[in-house]
Length: 370
Image 1: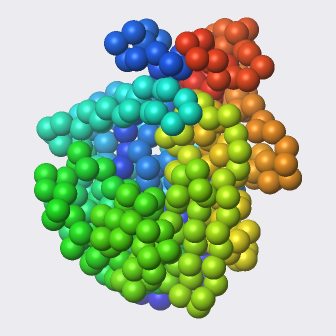
Image 2 (image 1 turned 120 degrees about the vertical axis):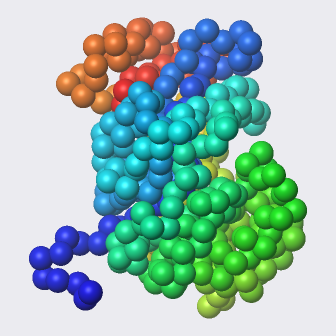
Image 3 (image 1 turned 60 degrees about the vertical axis):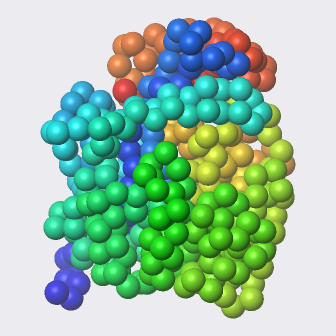
């Protein structure tokens, strides 16, 4: 059916993939065996990307599934409070909502522990439940490699990509998590098939190697283009990011130096800002610098979703300013327990906000919907 005059505008960004509850220790430099206080946050790469784009003013939605349990209810509430449409987030009574723990050893050691057994609800996304018309209309459609790791999510992801047929900006986040695949060697054909429907491919060097067999950033980027992408973005960690476009445009930009607290959400912030920059029609190098700055801000904070930056914060860092402290929602938006914790967190705030083995400032529950 062609668009009607009274149809709502298309979504700027629809993401499809993982969701869960992140439980992060509120002290850095402490192993899980010794951690005794945790912050609860919305997590999952596709969900975080939707939050990141929403923080930058974009109309976003996520396609995913949760358990039919209190954590699932929490995630619905969190998405809505972050400004992400949750109409396509549906329950799976058979499986619990996943939780993920991490350990935080700055600057570069952040072990993750996923609890997604016997199966994560977000791998139960089914083709017949997809709103293919809205997927086609969206200005950006973002899918992840995790969605290819098991059925029926794999078939639903493939069907969504095929129906979209490279319309607008169709992004494949390579999102390689070896623990989600029974046979990692079998992953590459699914990645290559998905790349044939993607106009943008995003991944780090390890992920690019899984998708293309190439580890050198330049060679991997060219392999992603050869597989079908029009824009290849290769994240190189401390070396920055490389972006190659099929038209020959190239951008290679260094990282933004920050004192790292938790690097786990930086890639998702990069993704949300990448969507924003591409939608704004910015030059490629400017898009990469903007996305790098967004990622750096989140790396300098404890959480992922609640740490996603606003546009003025990204502009401040791009102008050479410091990473601003994470904003705390107004008291009316927080339940009494969160307001109490916000007061306690502010009382122990340090100048750097990243003291190992010390309670961190208001970057945990106060900044997260609960």
